[in-house]
Image (cartoon, rainbow, N blue to C red; front, side, top):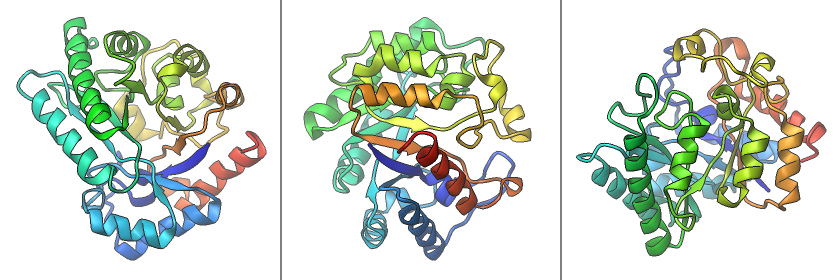
Length: 296
């Protein structure tokens, strides 16, 4: 397995849920990359929207070369439901994969499936006809990524998005070609959406493209209540350090090892909030858990 750290934690993402503004200089970004190297990570996974960095091929290539890190991928996606917007979403993601990801050595595209409300979830959940439209368009993007670029693509179920829960995830999987569309499961998002990460991983391992790890509060283990809201997330970070108790990581890791999983695992954390300490402290806590508890 190759472990990467999220660019959201490393660089910030414009404005975090608390409204804190992030503006990172090149030197601050290089300092963050050096922390990754110090803690033993092999790559990074930035998100589009983090300044100009993910779209600036020469600058990104230079920083990766100087740090010795690889680019796992850069998160893509957009409206893959609306008939008038999906074609442009497919084209923009394909071009980004061709022009940025492939030249930098990435081997997969990870997407978040959005709809008419952007990445916001429709009230009451996503209707079946919209899910099937998302599947058709996601399949078309994955087919182009695979056949024209020789790369993989996986979608990422995310709370508050049109593809949040097990039903919605399953509709996408059942209505797409496994050759073209895979899954990028996130442990915390699955728990918060009332899914069992170990069960999902076992049942869908053949579709897994890459992995995201993060924890959540212990009270969400085997959660059966409503998905926590974005307002709740603003008040209290739903994404907690590894070992907080929401996710059964030893069991999850055991499944990966049973299958000899040998690709990217991204520590998908947001930038640390003021009360949570520094990036270095966040990385130290999560890395210690990986070493001591999961024997990475």
